Length: 381
Ligand SMILES: [Zn+2]
Image (cartoon, rainbow, N blue to C red; front, side, top):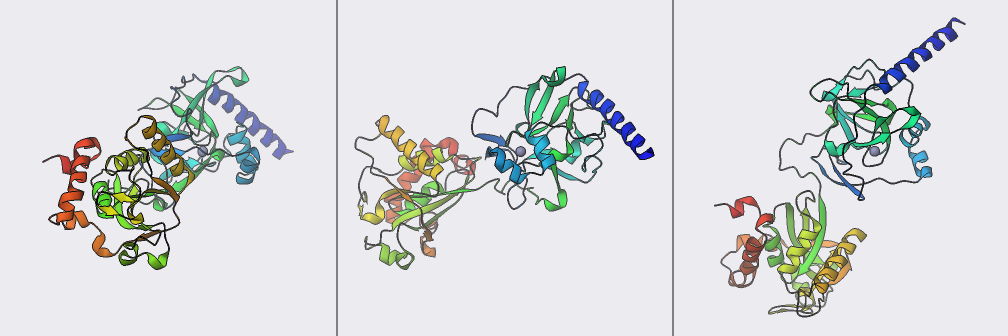
């Protein structure tokens, strides 16, 4: 009996606290910036545990069935059905460890432990999100109140509400359901202290004649983490320079470009590629003739294929070239790195007559035409 009375008293207290906590003056929602496309720009945690600067990340869209498989019933109720957990029941309410609070639905970082404070409401409270792009806000008129709901911008999961009665420096109180959060302690996060650490990596393999030139062009560009000469389009047995030179292996001299999409977009890479080789000459670049010198884009996924198709359609529509573009779009089966002496050939052999005659004009063209994309130290004296 006493237990029941205590429980009833606790429930009443929770209800009073709930009404108090959720009915204070509300903060108007900020402009929606994240909802229009299928991507958002936000800090993320990479699969190897690094907290990034804001990068483009795809929204997570699952069916109700998939969410039910992924989430516990309590998580589903709060994140997907906008439920509210009972006050003082959340695991993370009293957590004082240093680290990052992430969305329990999709793992997006939401709050740093630095901004957590004890609001006395019974729900974990923070005075600001980990980055502006890591929080979505919307007016909520439910229960006869006007409140500002906060959601995960990547998966749309309901988190809680934000009010204007928080501590400085923001004066805001993000009142969050503990069950909608996971916690990653600092000790599990890899440090991203230096700018040299890439925030995110993507790869595409391009061919446009001699790979020394293509590599030399892309080595100039800020955001290119690596440009590696090699072979694509044929088999492992013939992935060597001697065999590829016969023009009968199916291989093209190609360059694998690894880039940081937060610094250079795939469209920019394609723009540079088409500006630095002739995509209208079949199996030929200047004096280099043979299928190994074909213009090609080896796509690794449908997104790359679509981007390449759209870019070629755009060039065709704008009549950028006097003749039809013959660049082939080929699914990337495997990229085979070329022999060591082919790597960084332009940088290592600046006086080679071929480099002087063919590669350097392309490198110079890139530096002039794409000044804003060229690495700073190459443009400033
Ligand atoms: Zn999420």
